[in-house]
Image 1 (spheres, rainbow, N blue to C red):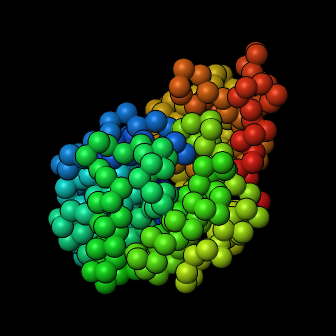
Image 2 (cartoon, rainbow, N blue to C red):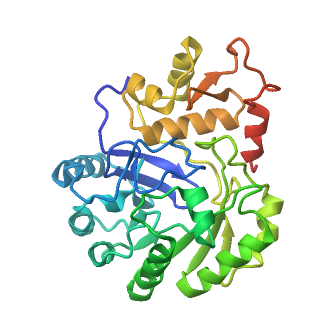
Length: 337
């Protein structure tokens, strides 16, 4: 079951923002410049600003060509994965060579932390679509929500976003993640919106913690709450924290089924890494399966030892209930269907 799975390319998987996306991972699991409290992949294990070729671009291209030859036909090739892709110094080469092998547009998901670097901006220039993030309107909230590497300042991050958007000839969709009791209030939204006016993206996408976050206190907002904040922002504004924004759900193309994941969870609770390793699939595919099962009510979550575990609701671990300190019902607040 999936033991021959690819290491760096996964999907196509359903994406709330892109439709069907063929995912490309350029850094090891949880290698990032941030340690965001809402991250659905979990806590960052390697917080760094060192740019190098963490994953060989040649190997990524080989896997990608194999996927395309096998008939994969996504809406986008999405460079994202389980960390910050701009940390890979081969990013520019990868984008250029992808553009040489297919007409499928290339999208890059980034937290935007390294856009102050000219090299990063230059490497992203060949992409069709770049999707950076902005989650705070001031330095103190930036530190609280994103928990950046010590070499990254709020001012430099914002200046990088502005500089990149000014010089980029492709399209920029800026994501803003709002959290209950933290940023999801009008005063914070006004500060973020003021910065968005400087960045001038083609589209603003309002999001929230729709999947179980790294920290229990990173609470989601309802669709109604997100709608109330929409008016603060200029231009085209989408609410992507709601399900069903792009029509009918799309199933991931994988040898692994939801039934395989459930069979594993019935034996014991698992982290994303456990499911990925146990079934031989990429963490990105594991997350998509777990997210679908959680929304269907078949899987719950709890935190133990600082790690988030997914469990079959057919076999609740003793002492863990929906009324306890770790609540499955509370996590359902992230369902925006």
